[in-house]
Structure formats: structure tokens, C-alpha cells
Length: 68
Image (cartoon, rainbow, N blue to C red; front, top):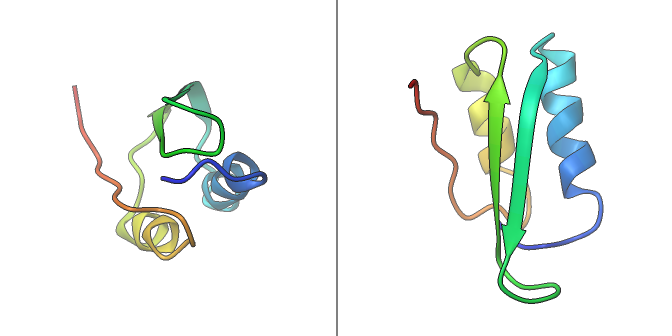
């Protein structure tokens, strides 16, 4: 994802509308305004509809769900 203001809040709104709580969030980037990595731990699995909504956001290059 690109590092742009408001993206964290937008993703929080998507999970919030789906009643999915974010239990942990980690963000990282190599340089200011550069590409970034966001890792979310969620209380429930993200639905396909929400994943597609996130993938459609400007600045999102990829999104994957992983169950550990």
C-alpha cells in the first residue's frame, strides 16, 4: 500500500461496518510517503466483500488473508 493520510481510518471503517474488531495493527514503511506494509489481526475472518472493498482503494497494491 502507499503511505497516504486517511488510509488507516478508511480500512478501520470497512472492518467496523462489517462488525469485525481489529485486535492488533502493525504499520511499517521504508521512507516517508513511500510504500508501506499494514498487518491486521482481526477477531473474526475478513469477508470476501470487505477484502474486495480494501483492494479497490486507491494506493492498495495487494491484500491477503492468512489464518495462523
